Amino acid sequence: MNQFDKKSEAWSALFSEPMSDLVKRYTASVFFDKRLWKADIEGSLAHASMLARQGIIGAQDLNDIERGMAQITQEIEAGQFDWKLDLEDVHLNIEARLTQLVGDAGKRLHTGRSRNDQVATDVRLWLRGEIDLISALLGDVQKALVDLAERNVEVIMPGFTHLQVAQPVSFGHHMLAYVEMFERDQDRIADVRKRVNRLPLGAAALAGTSYPLDRESVARALEMDGVCQNSLDAVSDRDFAIEFTAAASIAMVHISRLSEELVLWTSQNFSFIKIADRFTTGSSIMPQKKNPDVPELARGKTGRVVGHLMGLITLMKGQPLAYNKDNQEDKEPLFDTADTLKDTLRIFAEMIGGITVQAEAMEKAALRGYATATDLADYLVKKGLPFRDAHEIVAHAVKAATSHNCDLSELPLTVLQGFHPKIDKDVYDVLSLRGSLNARDILGGTAPAQVRAQIARHRARLA
Image (cartoon, rainbow, N blue to C red; front, side, top):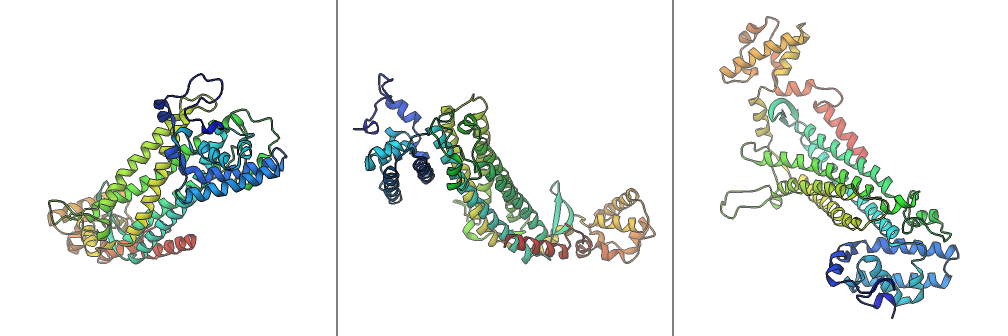
């Protein structure tokens, strides 16, 4: 009977009594960290290959380890692996099963490493894969937004500041603002990946090892960008997890901002858009209701992810070097952050594709807020007035339009000329929503020509 078969036995002869069942349950992580099994096996195989190349274990040991790991992989994938609470975590469970299958070769696998550098490696390998998935999903959301923008380049909506009607913008232009946000999220997470993709293995418990390991070859085998250069830092650092969760939090904040607008726009007070029924729910008491549950829930899940960021920062703030058991608490918030972001991006990519735009309602809303007032001020500036004087004149014109309960474009020319004699009949081209939109034909502006140019740029980037 080997050490892994002795349930509730002490770690070594140093201990005089077994761990209590209460402590065993309190300290175990296997039922949430077992998702690291692929990374654990991948890292172990790379470590074993290196040990064999360095002459630390024999060729037969390597063959046995590879054969045992192949069987363990089959068992886990088939749902037949017996995960044991007594073995505490994913690492000891896999090592125990390997030893059962191949004997002493399984015991030799742990030569030159500790669970401290092993778990740090596993988390990095797992997170690297999650980052790649999330990056692709961020691309899917951007593509859906670009498609929606292209279908609605000519649709006019009110642009808001302080949630007050400010200036008319293209609905396509508005959607592209979120494309820019999600592009930055993609850039951010790619940058995080560079710091995630470094190898702690070989740092052992905290001080390195006396065995002649070739850490660089393991990094190459695992397609990592390099090794962690300080053994103390390698086993105790979790800032890569914090940085990932920070990037995920920013992405969720962007999702939440979009969610807030979707919730507003689907309400009867706006009626700017309709969301496909499969992304909404009804009311248990009010049969007329159609609730935008998906964006509302995404808004709520943003708080959850930001909370994980705060939890991880707090987890690390008081830890001395090197490894501490506190770091077991990094996994659940990290796992949930990745899961939440992935699920949210998947559903948003599909939901955005099913949005129906209510163009008439948007245009009517733009007319209600004197959205072309700035255009009238710019018109007067082009006639030679200082901007501040033009600003004051337009304020009087808006006041008059308000008292007449009409838009600026509906004021008679004689009334407008009463505010300044340089106003002529060409002012009506300026005061129209379409004229305002077309006038902003500069890089980054809302003119349809510029929106189409940006759509082409994004399509080329996302191809």
